Image (cartoon, rainbow, N blue to C red; front, side):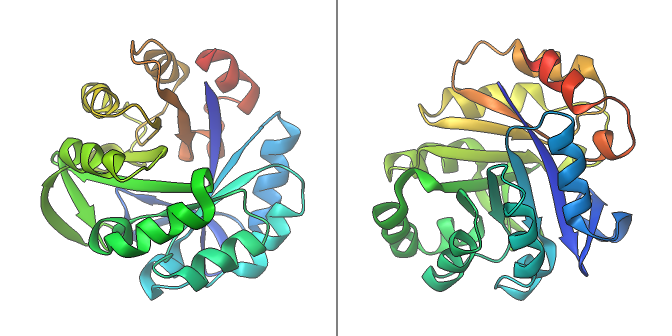
Length: 239
């Protein structure tokens, strides 16, 4: 399994939000590239980057920071505000290996289809859950569709990789939503990346024990920033 250290960018800084709440932010690094460099030095093989300003604006807002992170040489996947073809192109041209599309993948099927044709496996679809249902527009809106049904439907459209966040536990370090993750993985043959709730190595070990072979890895943010464990220890736990 792959560990994806998270770098969330807001106002040019590396921050973490609690349960996706912009009013409950903790800032960690004045330059997000410093966080990226730290994770790479500890052994990270792939980074997960979110442009929080972009998620609110509906277009990339922190391209300079993304370019600096990509220039470090570790593959990155980037999300936040990717709602049209130009935004996806900007992110990939900035050096991202993958572009993460969220709400637009559900609300604009034609856009998703076009991106899958143009970029194939470089497209990741983020399907985030609150109370088992899809959350939209940077987690500010609650959808009617269950996250399991959404993943199944998007799989039929050709999505090859999903990023699934349990909002209730995101940033809490209280443990991942294992049951929900198992249900999501069972609904698709695509790769699934887990996100939300990891606070110690036993949480990563629990993800690694999931029977579904298509759970590809886990995103970890706050626990790394607060030094609950190192990147190397996390990689070992997932193994």
